[in-house]
Image 1 (cartoon, helix red, strand yellow):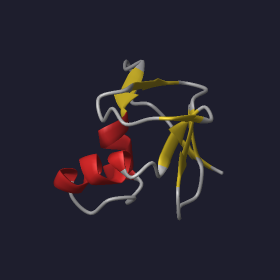
Image 2: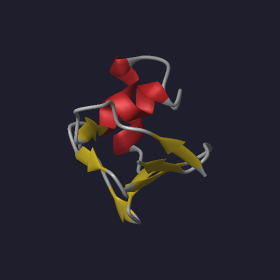
Image 3: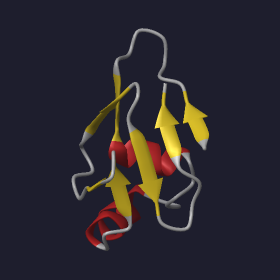
Length: 71
């Protein structure tokens, strides 16, 4: 499992930003398609909102990629 640290002073990161950060999608334009395909879960729940706020402790599963824990 890969761990992503939040930036100092920030409590959240948006799901769309995370997907780009971990190279799950090459461009922001493709985030929506990946989410709508059902390939992403947050804390074992399917997620389709690119603006979903992720906080420390959240676990994101992306089909075909290593799981990511927010820290």
